[in-house]
Length: 269
Image (cartoon, rainbow, N blue to C red; front, side):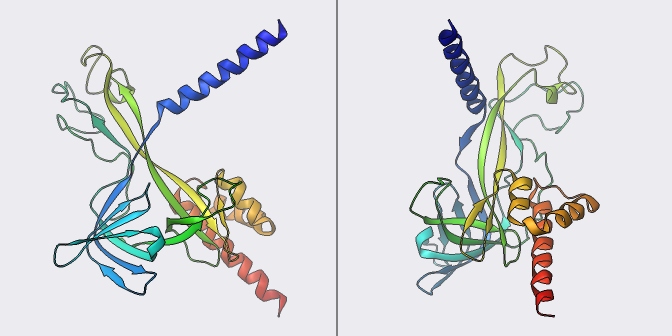
C-alpha cells in the first residue's frame, strides 16, 4: 500500500512538472538590427544590418553589395549592434482578429495584430555589445565547452552576461487582460492568442575564464562575492535595485567590482 501511494505521488509530481513546462513553450529567438560591427577571429571586420539567431549562435550580416555573410560563433570574437528592428519584450500574438472592443482595451485600442510591448524597452538606438565565449551550455557535468554568444551588460573585471530565449503560453478568452475591453461572453471560447515573453538567463564571467550561471541571481551572485555580500545587499536596498532585472543586476555587479577593487588596493596602502 505504501509503495503504491509513493508511486502515485511521484507520478503526480512528474505530471505537474510536465504540465508547468508545457504551459510555457520555447520558440526560436531571432533579432534584427539596423547596424553592426562584427570582429572575426581571422582579424576581418564585417559591417552592416545584422540578424542574430540566438538559439543557434549564428549571425547573418548584409554586405554593401547586398550579399549576406554567415558567421558562426566559432568564427566571431565579438560584435556590437544598434537599432533593434524586432522587439523582444512581452507582447500578445493573436491567432485571429478579435471583435471590436466594447470599451477601451487594457493594453491596446487596435482591433487586431500583436499588441504593444507590455514592459518598457531600452532605446532602439542604444549600442549593445556581445562577446563570444566558450560555454558548457548549461551542462555542469560536461567536459567540453563550445563557443556561444553572450550579451555583455557590465564592465569587468567580473562581467555580467545575458542570454535570452523566447517562451510562449496560450491565453484564453477568459484571461483578465481582456476584461476591460470584452465583458463576459464578448469573445469566443478557447485560446485566442499567445503571450510571448523574452526570458533572460544571467551569468558571471570571471577573470579566470569561468562562466558561472546565476540560476538564482541574488543567491548565486552573493555567493560569488561572499566577502562583499553585506555591502552589496545594503546597496541594493538603498537604491531599490532588483536582482532579477538586467538593469538592476548590472548596477549591482558594477558596484561589487568597485568594492573588490577597493579592497585589493587597500592591501597595498
